[in-house]
Length: 362
Image (cartoon, rainbow, N blue to C red):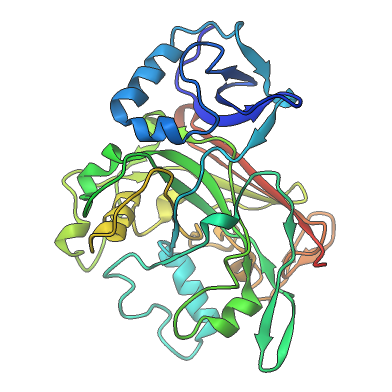
């Protein structure tokens, strides 16, 4: 049995050192022991560029899985790469429209600029944590003279894109694959009451910066080829820097669970702005890329309630509680809740799962 397309991560066995690994089914291949690539994080591989990425992939195809592997359930996973910078976008028209209707019911739901550029903001690289890390309920200012633990803790189901090759200037849409190594799942935890109070006029800050969970495995772009699909029609026509010769999107089904219960199944193909447009916008002003940069899509939502990607939408900010199969309900997350987000696509494409459990504020 040999290893073909694989996801990459960082693992350890017992008290042993961190090693770069490749996942195939329920086995983790030690890339160092196999003589393929020795590192303690993905960053050296990310920086090596597309030619080396392809070489490593080709060598994996010749490896016998019976050698230098461990059962996936017996290893400890670590954050797969050192995050240089983190930016988060707001690329779902359905999500942005719902948020506008919730927060600004007497105004147009979309701001005038929304269909002209991919809205984004800068997050905190230092609070990006690997799947399985507990999330402490944050505190912050909640209104005039009020401070305390958030009462509106939320998840956001997102897809993240991991930069390998740095840039010195703007990156065209068609040059996406020359810089981006792969994809991982993201849960951008949010304190909605803190966010709502602080967000005007400069956008999210404390309500978003306390924690962002990422999947332990990064799936290389070439492994997502079966999930490539047509890009959505955009009206009005975007500016030239947001137009590529070969526009594309990704057909991924996201599954969100709270305490094991499925609460939503958004589709990434419903996103309005595409990954290459996000990267082009991120760099168009000359902002450079660094190895280990992470940018995420923003909440993935669709047109129906069962395709919304956060509790803000699923419970309509608490006004319409989300029923759970055990007879309970949620407006926002409670202490002890475990959120799991997974993603699959055609021909066996999988991004794995990103999981986090809410712990009380202390």
